[in-house]
Amino acid sequence: MRRFRHYLLITVAVAAFSASVSAADLAVRMPVKAAPPPPVGRNWAGPYIGINLGVAWNHAKFTDVGDPVLGDFAFPAGATFWSPNKAGFTGGGQIGYNLQSGNLVYGLEADLNGVDSKTTNNINSPHYITGVTATTKLEWMATVRARAGMTVLPQTLIYVTGGAAFAHFNDSWSPIAAPQDSFSSSKTRAGWTVGGGVEYMLARNWTAKIEGLYADFGSSTVAGQSAFLSTYRSHFAHEVATVRGGLNWKW
Image (cartoon, rainbow, N blue to C red):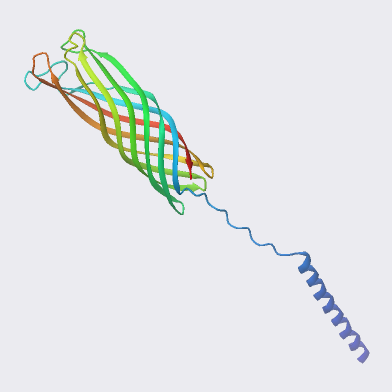
């Protein structure tokens, strides 16, 4: 019995030693790898500059206010006799600055675009057999806007925007039979604009965007001389919708 216990103790000691050697060997052969670092989000903060191309729709309203002394002239007083919606090519550039807090991106942007949008039409008049001819032209448009949006993916930004808008319009109309009785306006008008868009980060310093803007420039009143040498007034109102794509370089 004593000999059996002696063998048993020797067997247990050898087994324990073998287990410790095997464990040490496994620790050497199977190292534990560190967890990979979390993905780093894209940085939208900082200044940027870029170009844009698109289409602008000049929606005009020509309203005959009439002669306060002699009454109606070419159209019934207060009648909007022409309301064109002329599309034209637009192209220009923008500059801005972004701030970022987590996935919230906000900042300011200013842009200046040339616009090729002109239309002319002959319109029937109850007072002139030959009718009248009317023309409207949008030459350029600029905006200064705040932007705010969220990054739905590390490289994609969805934003809304709004602010002030400025544009230059050339408007005129006159009876075809009496072109001397013309009413025209060539001025830079101020208004407001709202819109939104999607911007995608192509690389560390390059982004591409698609955005839409709506701008309202209100109504401008023009006073002129009628054929009877009294004051005649006309309203020219404008709204502009723009859809454009852009490319920015940020630093």
